[in-house]
Image: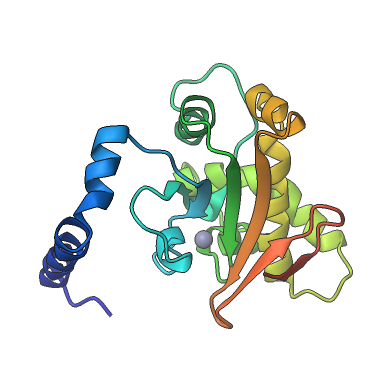
Length: 206
Ligand SMILES: [Zn+2]
C-alpha cells in the first residue's frame, strides 16, 4: 500500500539503480536506437492492473494505451480529440508493432458503472462507457454460466477487438498477417490471466 509521495521517490531511485546502473546498456540502446516494442497494450486506468508489472516487462517492451475500461472506439472521422485512436495509429503505423493486446480485468469500475446503469448527466465517464453498451446486451444474452459482471467485462474486450478491425490500417495488417490481435482478461482475485480464443470467443487460462 502506497504511503505517499516519498514511496514514489524511493521507487524512482530503485528504478534508476536497476536500469541505469545495473543494466545501463538497456537504456543506452533504447535512447540511441529508439523504441521497438514487442506489443501494444490497451489497458484500463485501474491501478491494480499495470500491464508492465503483470507481464514482468522491461522498459521499451510495451507500448501502453490506458483508458477507462480498456475500450477501443470504432474508427471515426471528424471530431478533434481521439486520444486512443491517435495512440493506436502511432503504435501500429509508425512503430509497426506486431502484437496488439486488449487487456481487461475483473472488478472494473467502468464496466460496473455501465452494468449498474449509473448515469451522471454530463459525465465524461457515462458518455465514454456508452461505447460498451453492445457488450452489455451480449452479456445479457449469454447463457454460459459466467457471473454477469464478468461476462460484461469479457464481452467488452471482444467488442474492442471488433472495433479494432474498423480501422483500415489495422484490418489490412491483420489480413496480411503483419499484426495479431489478442484479448486478455486478468482475474485479480485469482491472480489468473485468461486469453480469448479467437475461434469461439471463450476465455481460457494462459
Ligand atoms: Zn477497469
